[in-house]
Image: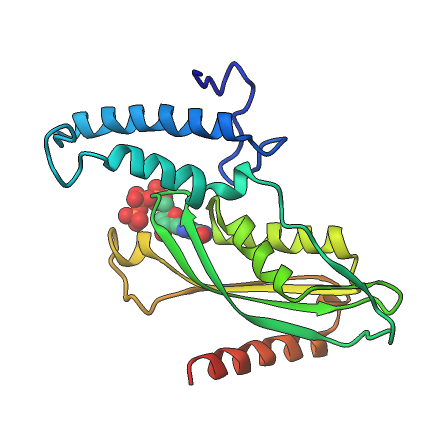
Length: 224
Ligand SMILES: Nc1nc2c(ncn2[C@@H]2O[C@H](COP(=O)(O)OP(=O)(O)OP(=O)(O)O)[C@@H](O)[C@H]2O)c(=O)[nH]1
C-alpha cells in the first residue's frame, strides 16, 4: 500500500494527533514509505546503506523508531483513564512526580528529556483517577515533535477535559539537546522550566507556592 498523506488529508501540525489511531496495515505502510525516504536521505548524505555493515538496515530501523516510538503519540489513542469515586470528598492538593519525560524537539529533531510534575486539586464531588495515568498521559503527549510551552498545555488541557478537577498545575523541567549537543552547545545541566496553572490552582498564590515547594521537595527526594 502506498501512503499519500496529502491525498488522505492526514497532514497535521507536528504535535497534533490524527483524527483516528492508525491500524496495523497503515502503520506498516508508513514505516515502509518512510524507510524509502530515509534511504534517499542517506544517498544524498553519501552514506552507503547498501554495503556498509553498520548502516545497512538503518533507514528501516529509524523509520520504525519514529512511527512506533518517537511519534507514537500522534498515531495512537490517548491512555484509557480509570476513575474512582471520591468517596471521602478529598479536595486538597495532590502532587505527583518526578515523571520521566522523553520527547523530541520540533526544530532540530533532537531529544528533550527531564521531568514533569503534576498538581491536582480534585473536586469534592468529582472523580479520582489512577495515579499511573498521569505518567501515561505525559508519555502520550511527549511522544510527538514538541516545544515545551505547548507540551505543558497539551498535558494539562487533556487532564482538565477528562477529570474536571477544581484546579491543575503542570510543570516541566527538561534538557533540550538541540541546545546542549549542537548550536550554542550550552551546559548539559542547562534546563528549561515552565509551569502552567488551571482553575483554582492558578487563582491562589498560596496554592501555587505549595505546588512549587512540593515540586522542589520531590526533585530533591528523587536525586538523593
Ligand atoms: N521557546 C522554545 N524554544 C525552543 C524549544 N526547543 C528549541 N527551541 C529553540 O528554537 C530555536 C530554533 O530555531 P532557529 O533559531 O531557527 O534554529 P538555529 O538557527 O539552528 O539556532 P541555534 O539553535 O541557535 O543554532 C532555537 O533557538 C532553539 O534553542 C522549546 O521547547 N521552546
